[in-house]
Image (cartoon, rainbow, N blue to C red):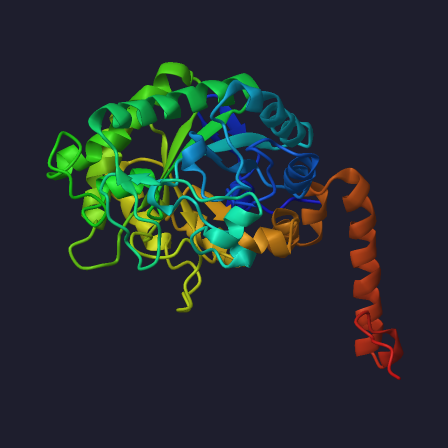
Length: 397
């Protein structure tokens, strides 16, 4: 059987990382860690996405400082005792055919919060009574951006240098754990974004004020990471490409920052948006499918850098069109993957027909290909006048 060529299943290479296809499992917080340490649950959770056909599988965001967690359930990379658990994650992903990737992160002003199903508000007295007391968030500026949030403490210049070094040490630990790709989460109102956005940064020192000074923090983070992260391994940055607010960060600013990051060894921009002054969950306003794809397309064209598209990309045909039309190089799938861990494998069938089953693990695909043929015969018979043979027939009471 001739395999139909599809953009989504074209291999992709950056430095020495070789992805078998263009689908990426997004970093998604699961809130299941204990003291920042990987549990068995995390290993099973990520391994299924490698089996499900993703070319690149990210950990959830790994806090580079303990105070940089969002909740008590977040994974961390702030001490060497966390390396062994992270190595288990990298090994499990690689064993099942995907490239293992880690995301480094500091929640900054959004720290000390409840888990989402507990309200995702600031930790308070009730949480303290059960052993989860709030801690002091830090940020470029000492002002809460949402009413009721914990007011952060502004970092001193010496402390800023310490956080930059924490990102570097996080990269070292990810290298020791065996990851092949690192991404810095520099969006969504967390610490890095808060430094470069004028909405999050009212400093008047070397890390605030002008655009160049506000960009200094992410640029120095990238430079510090490359001290430990080898030249043969890719480095991604997730940016909030716009603040989508008056006097906020703009797409033109993102193009300039991307050029600076490229000079420091950043290979790809993961294009998201928003987050300053907003809760760290999805808002109630509906967003259209692929609403952030134009950011990826614009940065790709303006900088010549590869980009990754994210944001309500749910359907195989949509993902294929984004790639085929040159809007992005990779497709990042988040909550749709929680709903369907086999999203890439099902996309193969949607795009390539019955031949797409050849991309499934042999122990799945051999059976499913034959099952599909049988179901097609049942439907053909039903269409010929034997409705009791329909493959989607349901029993009735």
